Image 1 (cartoon, rainbow, N blue to C red):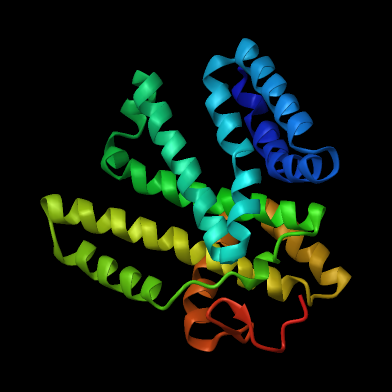
Image 2: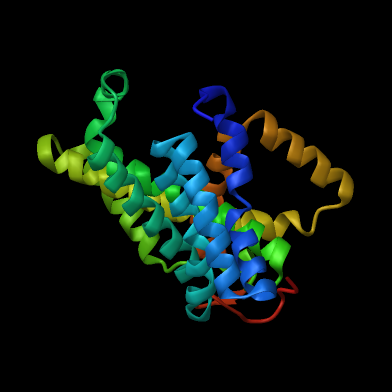
Length: 247
């Protein structure tokens, strides 16, 4: 509605757009679902033109998850992240960044594309989890597991960030942020796997803590993503279940 105060509400509600698309497609068919989506985007366009691409990109996650699920959870979530990143970059080139925003992010302007991917990967993971929870036809998010190459990329880029300068430092920081996004996504899957095994009381306590201090949750997810490559908490092999995982 053009109000920054409503942004968190809009972001929260948008988590359920892919699930709604998949549900509608399964129960009402493609023609009605596509028509409803087009009408919804048209309504958004007349309310706030610049928000249309944002809503459209989230809407695209529904069919993307359905098409990519055959290749595994990792492919679906990362495919969604790439869609969101690409639309964000296109939107930036189409509308540009406001002058005040450029001044505020001048120090991290060179790293914005990697930050776009990091935030898009996290959002894609949350929307995939919401879709799986509501629609029950997607493989569970807890099965997401990336290769050990993510740890190698994280380590090499972190060391390069400390030792390089100039252009090489910019490249290494971007790679570091990219790897952090991947590890956080895997850490979210690991956290959810543990969370499902908590008692109701502990679920409530942990949920309140996450709500109060979200940065702590993402830091925990990053650590879990790193440790999972070593300890394989969920006993997964190549992203597929290998016993011991009832989710």
